[in-house]
Length: 307
Image 1: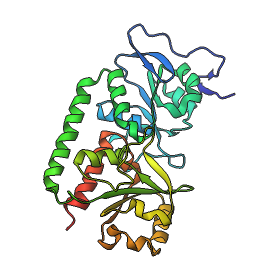
Image 2 (image 1 turned 180 degrees about the vertical axis):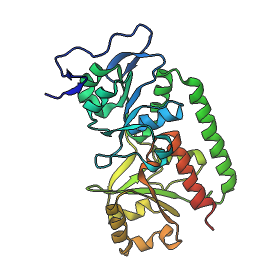
Image 3 (image 1 turned 90 degrees about the vertical axis):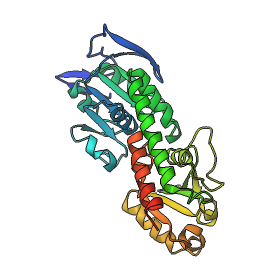
Image 4 (image 1 turned 30 degrees about the vertical axis):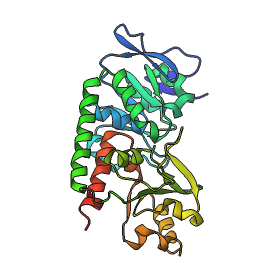
């Protein structure tokens, strides 16, 4: 039996909710059905780092949130300035139900990966589960949250700021990379090299800027944002004039070092031209406009300020 305790109350599949039905609420449809959520929640818990970032963009301060990866307890560096007072709930696949119950939230927002514990979360507080199809659904995810929380004005202003930054970046680039191809890759523990395509979060930002990706990445996948298992023999598929490598752990750096010793790696244009850049994977896959800001900063750093 999965359970959590709050003020001595046991939460399990046979008990009733700890919260009373709301009189003044907004009925929304989501992945798990319908939920009437408070119109002005002030104790929001997020069980998805993507949701956490998007709430911060909308000007809301969650009281707690789950981290992105199973082996990381904290939040990504790009979110650190905004999350000093946000309690940590463990990883976003298996959040601590006990911690959530003790916090007594008035709203829980999560993603599809927590379907199994939704019945338990919904006993603690009104809970909505947001669609997530990978980073390709980041704009849809943001729009859902804005509409559900009645933050359409903040939503519109956030996009206006984003496109203003895109416009300024285009001016700074001044067509220098008009005919160049920008490749985005990362490493998987059992997937080999991962190729991030146009429908991914970083791919969509590059597209908004007007930067092109190699032919194999210049695609919109129907339900996805990446191509797994690019072998060393297929490196030409991710060949570009510039390569951004998304890294996080020490093992990523080791894989890159191993790759750099391969003859095929040395034949890539970006390698020969000295335009291979490592960037933070949690930022480049952050899937919210705070992360997009940080990605734009990286592009300024490496494509505008680099001779």
